[in-house]
Every structure is written in structure tokens, then in C-alpha cells.
Image 1 (cartoon, helix red, strand yellow):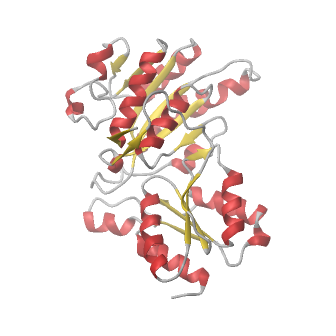
Image 2 (cartoon, one colour):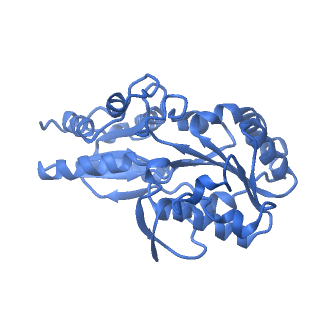
Length: 328
């Protein structure tokens, strides 16, 4: 085990993959330029180590980057491309949605089309709405795509390595605010199977389901509620597609209550699918209505105070939990 940052864990995973398999290469806007002098940046030092044949800075064209990935995957390579900010996924969506996600199905499952798309998510940087729109629900809605959203350094490395060598296209969502967060990370070829959620705090009165940095919002709320006598279980999904349905239902059946938390907007957000699934398959175990805590249905503001208002905080999670445990 080594104590490194979230960004360094991603870097370690990319470095390991490049060394393990000659078919792996990185491409994207700025993956090798001086902007990555910070050692906590995921591609720091990789251009110098592997050269421009394996680490390719690209023009500012997300459609071209995604097209490069699809073509390379069809030729048997293992491309890892960076689209940068999550909203730029829209510019790459034709190649990812209409080609990458469908090719294996169109081959009748006889061919594999591995490719990894890394995107940066999260708010709190005053980057404006063009750079701060979380689209995980949109990505998860596309048949043929897998979607992972790590919340800590160990998961960042383990999920990335699993994504890199998965036979399907995988969207890896990296929260920018976590790049500098330290944590214990296993060394070597460490992989976390896709589709396995993790209970990060056990509890008995209510389940709070989340992913990414919102997990820490949930943990802070759970800590305060514990002082009030409420025992909250926090479940980190880690993988949105495939979803650990069994783990989710097990937690809800145990606690009988569910709060879903994410930083994306509420309407048609990923939490709606979680709520529907639990209502369909564990309704008889629910002791109270399901609650969702999410961002308001507006573009992310540029203003720092408005941006803070936009993002769900521990107080809102606590209010949701209290409302269904009938304690205030």
C-alpha cells in the first residue's frame, strides 16, 4: 500500500497499463503538455516516459478524439482518450453513442471494442455552466456503454484498470476536486470489478446512496445524525453501469429507508433510476417514501455563492433522512 493522491492513483494506473500492454495509448487535449507539471495531474510525466507514439496531444476537437478512439479500438488497440470537461462529452457523443456503444452488439458479440473515455466532472471551481454539467445519467442511458464514478484514490486506480482492459467501451468519470485527495492505494496491478458497490459506513435506520465526491457529503451528514441517535448506512455505488443491484437492495431491505444523493440535477437524474428500481423490487421493505437530494434543475452558476447553493450539502441530506425517520 502507498499513500498517494487521487490524481496520482490514476497516473499510476495509466502508467501500469502502458507498461503492461503495447496496445494501450493515451490521447486527448493536453495530456502531455506543461499544464500537467503538477504531479497530482493524471497524465503527469507519461509523455516523457513513453514518448509521443503512446501519449498523444490532440487538436481541440472532441469529435476527432472520440473518432480516433473508435477507429483504434476497431483495429485491436486499447485507446484511452480524455475529453476533459464532462459537457464536452456532447461534442464527442456521435462517435461514442452511435458507434462505440453499438459495435459489439452489431457484431453479435463476436468482436470486442475496448476503449476508455476519461472525463472531468464536478463543480466548485467557478468554471461556468459550459464546464460544470454532470451528464452521468445521459451516459448511463446509452446501451453498450459502461460508466464508473470513483470517490477515492484506491477506487480511482482499481476501476480505471478494470475499465482499460474491459472488452466494452467504458466512461470513467473523475471528479476534479478529488485530484489532490490522499488515500491508501494498493501497489501493482490492482483491479476492482465493475459493478460492485461498497458500504463505506454501515447503519441500520436509513440508507444513503451516492457516488463521487457526494459520498463525503453523505458521510458528513451521517456523522452528525449519529450524534442524534440515527444510524445511517452510506453506500458508494462506484459503478453506475453495471449497477450493483444486489448490494443496493440488500442495504435498503436492511434499513427500510432510502435517500439518494448526487450533485447532478434532479429531474431525470441517475437517482431516478435508483428510486424506480427500489420501488419495483423492494417496495414491501420500505418503511417510508424514498427521498432524492440533488442539484436544482438549472445550469451550474459561475458565481461562487450561487455555485455553493447549487451543490447539495450535508444539511439537505440530514433534512431528508430526518423527514423519513420522523425525527427532527
